[in-house]
Length: 321
Image 1 (cartoon, rainbow, N blue to C red):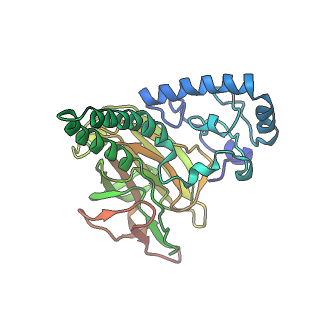
Image 2 (image 1 turned 90 degrees about the vertical axis):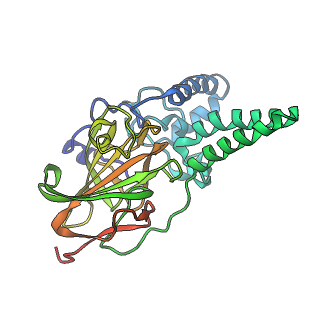
C-alpha cells in the first residue's frame, strides 16, 4: 500500500473530520488498546531510550498530525490514516506479525476474549464433574473467537480485466442503479452478506487510488434487514483505477447486529493493489461493491459464496476502453 505524496494530496479531498482513527466507531477493546499504548510509550521512553532513538532515526514520513507520539510501528495501529509516518519493512520489528494467520486488526480482541475463555475452560476442567461439562461451552466459544479472526492467504487472479470480491460471504443482491453520482452514470451494486463464520478482512477489488471517503455513524440492525443498508453505520470508499482509463468504483462496508466496528486504514491519495487488505468488519456484516453498469459483466448470482481477493465478481467487457 503506497502513501499519498504531497503533490497528490493537494488535489484530493482531506480525510473527513469524523474519521479520527482507523476504527472511527471506537469500542471497549479499542479504548483498552489506547490505554495500553499510553502505558507502553511511557515504558519505552523511561526504560528503552536507545530503542526509541533508533526507531526515530529510521522513521520515514511525517508524524505531525498523529494524535499521539509515534515511537515505533505499533503506535500507528489506529492512526496510520492520520499521518504519513511509517518504517521500511527491514526496520519494522513487528513485521513478523504479518505472517500470523490472524487479522492484525483483531489481535487485541483475540487476546482480550480468548485468554479469559481459555483460562475459564482450564478451571472448569480442573474442578471436575459437574463443572467440567461446562468447559465444552467455553471451548466452543473460544474456537469461534479464534475462527472469526482468521486471515487466510488468498491467491489473487492475474486477469487484467477481473474485479475481485472485496469481502468473503454470500451474494445477497445484484441490483442495477439508474444513476450513481460518484460514477456519473448507471451502476450495478453487488451486495455481500458476511455471517459470523466468514473471514471479515476487506480487500481491494482493483488496483486503485482512494479519491473520496465517507463515514456515517448509525444503527446496528441485522445485516439481512434491507433497512440496514440505509440506517446502519458504514464506511464508503471511492476508488479510481491507477491504470488508464482510470475507471471509478466504490466499496461500502456496513456494520451489522453483532459487527459494530469497521476498520479502514485508507486515506485519500493512497494506492492499493488488487486483492490488498485494507481493513475489516468485526463480527458479521455486509459489504457492497458498486461498478459502472455498462462497462462490466457481472459473473456472480444471488446465493453464491465468494472469497475476498480471489473470487471474480465481474469483468470489464470493453477491453479497448
